[in-house]
Image (tube, rainbow, N blue to C red; front, side, top):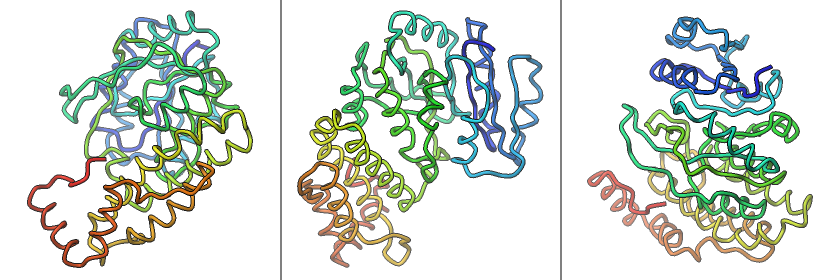
Length: 335
C-alpha cells in the first residue's frame, strides 16, 4: 500500500478533471495512489479517466447515481494508505505538494492535520489571490477557534490526515450538499493533535459559478450551518475541556454566519422563497446560538443582520433593496 492516498470524488467533472489528474500524477514523490470515486457521470468524465494509463490510478465506480454526500461517504469503506487527502475534481496539486507534506509530517509527527498555503484560481485557471496567511502550527484549541472564526481560508482540498484518524471520526459527515461538513471534519481531526502548516504554496483551489457552495440553495446552506452548530453544542457535552474555546468564540461565529444566512434570504423575492423570512430565521438562530454560547444570544446585535430584518419587514424597503441589487449586481452586505 502506498504511503499517500489521494482521493478524488467526482460526478460530471469533465471540464476540469483532466488537469486535476495530471497535477496529481506530476508529484515529485512517487509513493502515492490516486483513488477516483466515480459517481455515474453523464458527461465525458469517465472517458477522460480511462484515457490515463497509470497503475497509480484506481477507479471505484458507483453502482447507482449518488448524492454528493453519499459518494463522499464511500471514502471510509475503501482501503487507504497511511496518510490521505481529498481533492476536488476542479482543483490542482502543485508538483511539490506531497514532498512538502512529507516534510511537515516528519517535523510535526504528533499533529493530526496538515496543510500548506495555496492560491485561488478562477474557472479558466487565472490567479485570483493568495490564501490568507497561516501560522506554522496550531494547538487543538487554536485550530477550533480559527476554524470557527474563519481565521484561515478553510477549503476541502489540501488537508492531509492519517487515514485511521479519518475513519475513526466517521469520515466526512453527511451534511446536505456537504455544506459546512468539512469544518466539522477538520475540527474533529484537529482535536486529535492540532495542525501543522507549510508556508509554501502547494496547490490551487478553483472558484467558479458551478461550485457546490455557490450553487446551493439558502435552505440547504442554513441546514448545513445548523448541523455544524448542533455538532459544536454536542462537542461541549462530550469534551468539556473544549467548552470555553467554543463558547468564547461562539458569538462571533454566530454573527458571521447569521449575517450571511439572512442576506441570502433577503435577496430572494418573498413569493419565490422556500425558507422562512428573516425575522423567523433570526429567532431560530437566537435559539441555537444561546445553546452554543451558554448564555442568551441575539443575532440582531449584529448591525447588518438587524438592518436586514428591518428591510425584510417593509414591502417598500425590500422592493428598493431588490431593485438596488438588480442595478448594481453586487450584495449590499459583504459577508
